[in-house]
Image (cartoon, rainbow, N blue to C red; front, side, top):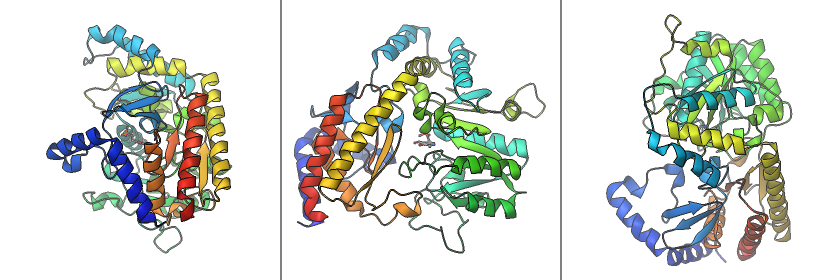
Length: 448
Ligand SMILES: Cc1ncc(COP(=O)(O)O)c(C=O)c1O
């Protein structure tokens, strides 16, 4: 059967199962461009309208239930409406939500992060991962008195101008003459900003050194996700992060880990898991227990740039920085995320990967899976990709079919094949997902 026929059939099945989502989308289009307010949550023919979520499940407006294996792009590490987190949040709702003042919960969450995350000696709160990387970079620039950064091809760090380069370029600069040159991801970015960004392939410390040798005097920091998340859950090669650490020291630039997604890999984040301590860390998602949050922290001497007692200190605004709800939920979420919880996540994720790989083998599907801890990604590549260039040239229609067919079978993953587990995902959810995946591959087997 043709790809188009299978795609159209799967889409028709989706439309038949979700008439109310379709209706809701028609209304959304009247008020929001394309009916959308978050690019990554959109897919064709229309995104589901979710009415409520509980534990490991999402329920759409048509009453369909989905096993949530996306968890709001890794942030809902304890699933939805976790009773312990809800109880803590409910207990403070009548205290008001945000004041222009210090609150006790800020101190508590700050202490937890400083104690758990090796690089974090001092921390400040903001409202998103975007702000976290933006301020981490600003701190690095102020501290080093230099302005440029090295970022990785395929690395996602939020939506401020400086980092929206070479996230999803249509081609890879990897091996051509212009390999350092940033490619804007969209219109609307300042081309002046591009002068401050150098691009290196992920997992290639030599490429970083090549830039540093020539541009050391300009470069304030190397910015890297320890595991590339949005870029396809690509784990670091052995020693890669350590090599970056050494290069940063040798060339006197700072090393920033963007741990917005990877904090879930260990109680102390990927830096503890891999034993490499950066100078600064950007955080978000899980540390807010399901509420909006961001944080950045690191070496005391660098973070001192924000100390208001210092002459010409760095200002750091944000109306909802450190608000009562995000802090309270964050403390509860951190309390729940102990070593035992992470080990269970690791086991269940391994179990899912193993079962999916068995299905891939059974149908000889040209699929590979990348996984690090509880984060994983399906790729239509013969080998697991190790950098952005290796994720290119995948038949995009096939991943779209898997996505829509899994939805039709009650499993919610990212349209581009990313999955991650929560601490409330059950063994049965893994079993059901693996069976659904096997069924989907069987239905697609004529395409391989
Ligand atoms: C690694 C990484 N950094 C930064 C961000 C931006 O976070 P936010 O969406 O909270 O701005 C994300 C979001 O997915 C991310 O995955």
